[in-house]
Length: 253
Image (cartoon, rainbow, N blue to C red; front, side, top):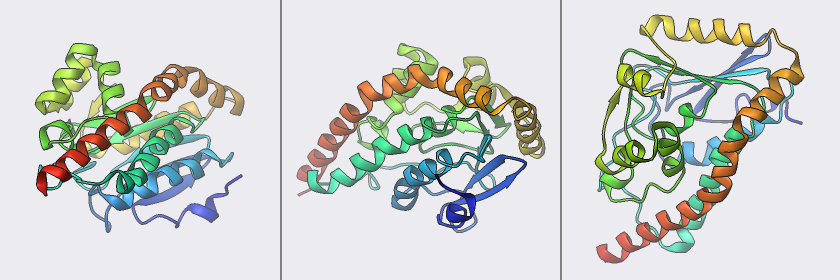
């Protein structure tokens, strides 16, 4: 089993602190807002495995840094164009990123501190989703940038928004602002920026009053259907995304 001192300082893109069994993960790039890329894509799967393997973590909060949760906006120029052997690493990491997140068997709270333009499915897979007034959601890194949204976005957004709304969101690059996200059921509460993390900690302390097994098994019960969907669709979606990436590479040549 993992212990906090073994993994707390292990990752470039995640700052960790724990008080009274509540672990806060703060995503960042060099101390500023998270810039999605190879480093977090490689680190997040193992970090989530470490967090899930530590029995001292009773509730987990995830948040971003500064005025943005994740970015920058995707573009066709930045879309990966990789041969199958190169894509295999992306495939391996992509499967474990979300499955390891869902394997964290304690309640999770996300405090989305600003726009989540890249991999916004990560905070939306938490059990309680809080958003700042400046938060917004977009899948800027896939279809509108020339890449198949097969790394879990194709599972999470149709599940949360409904099939037609989810497909529209992924195909058009729609941006959903925080208040609309609340109306659509993506987030539970919208708060001023300064109230966001205090509210997350208040809720975490409230949850942490329950016994360990109640905390763990409630999370397991509430995520089982999502895990089944990921088991069925995630690997296949990543393979299709890889085929699209390889085609982009061939067309570029």
